[in-house]
Length: 493
Image (cartoon, rainbow, N blue to C red; front, side, top):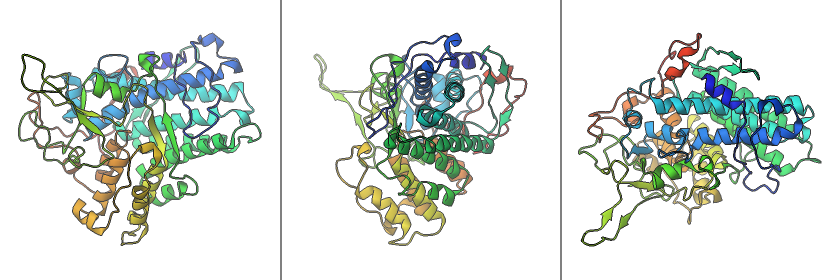
């Protein structure tokens, strides 16, 4: 943890993150390396902001900086691997440990590296916010303050949704002095996230639209609103969350994307690299209860991603023509040489962007509030909201045609309205770091059994005969040097 926090102070080379649909990409200068001693001038704010964005992108989606899909996989990869979106198609025991639901060891080096990157992202965003307040006290023309506060809020959401209760949050001064933090419960992490989103909203609301694009101001307010609503949903405050992201406040067309590029491996889309390039992850299908080793699909309870035929789940299995003297086509295999490599094709290049917050998520939050209110009759808000998305899919999903309308028969076929809603959430929000949090909510808020929502039963690789029982990640051994931390408060969903 000490090294990760110090690295965050350097605000190194990072990505620029434009807003979808905005004409003003916030005028980001090309980022450069900034020594800590030069961080006291307003001119470095664009570079500090870019560093925070780059660190966030790495923690969120990973990169291409090594052969396993990133310096460390982001939450999009590891959260989906513990859930049912991905299966492991390579040989690293640290990742098999996650895919098979553990027990995930606190000494798991890959998880530890990802944990450090997540804290680096948190620290970089909060450090950037502090610099904005110090160096530009008149922030009515500084859009970066609201943006980095929202990114900080998202890191706390990811800690709450992904790790056990009891993640410590430490701070570091400019001279490298560390103040070790006490473990924060899941509720405390979510409350901290809400606080950051509230600060982001206040900063965006205060922007002077004679000096800043009104479109940019609206985008920042919507980013914070969707983030806060997500945290409220995690707390079970369904109606409050829905009211915050009404269609008036957050239109379905809204999206905020994390950008990637081909410039450096650090800036690559880690999801694309982990699947199509390095072949370490493959798209799952009814994960759990495998009847044979390396079977292409299980019997569940993981969702039928590939076999559903749903156009929102975009994948491929590459089969190449035979090369003499071979006479049979060659089917693409993962890095392990045995698992069929089902590539995701939602992200089609190293430079493909990934959504972080969208109007589609806002509509799904509204639909869940309707479900909680019992408004699930034909023609009610539940089906009207879900079918509004299906009849006019937002452009950021790049779907060719509308989807057929859902009915009460759809809910019956899915096993009830709750199952239908969470299937819709899984397919609309596929591989955007939502699924693990949703599976945990199904247990915590809807009373489902863990093995009825997480992959369970027989595992498909010989190293592990059956799935374990983990539903989140333990705090890594790195925190052993924190005198305030002993172990997770609990591993509950």
